[in-house]
Length: 427
Ligand SMILES: Cc1cc2nc3c(=O)[nH]c(=O)nc-3n(C[C@H](O)[C@H](O)[C@H](O)COP(=O)(O)OP(=O)(O)OC[C@H]3O[C@@H](n4cnc5c(N)ncnc54)[C@H](O)[C@@H]3O)c2cc1C
Image (tube, rainbow, N blue to C red):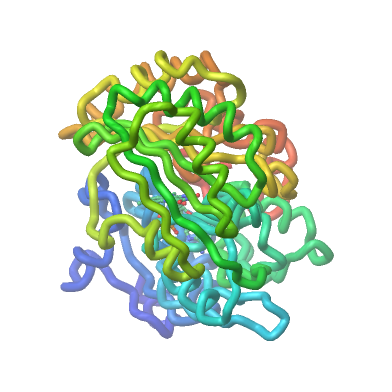
């Protein structure tokens, strides 16, 4: 470790360092007891290269960390090296409308820069999520049906592969690796040090939601599934069921201001909402509106499936709220997501379903989620979204990557033949 510490511009924190205990903590508190061997606070691409070379020669576990929001704590490897790239967080919007983003940037910084430049793009909702982890798994967000996944907007990336080489990849440079980065999951092919995304000129947006009493949950799902099949791709929507205190909500983001489709949805649901909200906002305020929490660390477990066919609204509502501290988000797909390219395999999905549980312990949360995961798998297929990575998901390779799996395995064999970047759910 002394050699590595000397080779880095940034600090290398070891367990004896006073800053180590805080620096190792990621977003989910359930993994706080993990003890990495060292945390490299990288200040430059060269620092990342030295770390990868070190891990490869020493054969120790290694993981990049950007936003630290991995649901399974995979950016905190027990006994391994954390390559913390959070200082590589510059964001530059260029004249041609592309935005170049450091591998450690958080969504908040990107939205801020893109919004201020009068542009917009689609990524996730939580401002403290890392662009890296989110984009490498696809990345769904409130403009997804209009702009595609975060990975669909990617035009190039630079990354340090297992041999320590810095590579720039795009459609024309190492295209297989570029394909793999667009949905092949965080941590699998190297440490990304920058992303270049396309953006589009900003348009007025309408953020809206309808809030009902919990007995309306089946009616919401019933109305949503026929309505969502008909609305234009300018309309993105999300159903929210479950805690806290019995939520039954449907909301979304419309590119534009003609809200007649929301009237139509409200008519289809039939019941009178407790609250109806519609706000015309610019891109930046829209992203702020979707931002949840204030970045405080949390404890929860999550599982995901893709909605691939019609659902029984009553059975679905009962299943995903079957425990008191469970809640469910159903995020609409279709539109530009269905047309995107790259390794992300769930292009035909109608929506992603995420069920989260805030039980007292990770064991209890996982135990209570298991029947939900199994039932959803029986209804809609044994698939799952790698960004909602789930350590308990059976046959996870196929679930996350579907038909892209053999091609992703070939890319991983080529660029990481010695499995330097191996982790429990690594390709
Ligand atoms: C509160 C919350 C809200 C979320 N909202 C959304 C959402 O709206 N849409 C969505 O799609 N997802 C969402 N997610 C899921 C999120 O996209 C994933 O958890 C993602 O992996 C987090 O990335 P990160 O960089 O923050 O996490 P990390 O824990 O830093 O990284 C996640 C994985 O990616 C690897 N990785 C990190 N940095 C790099 C890098 N530079 N190069 C290569 N590999 C790297 C890590 O080793 C790890 O395996 C949300 C998660 C949370 C906790």
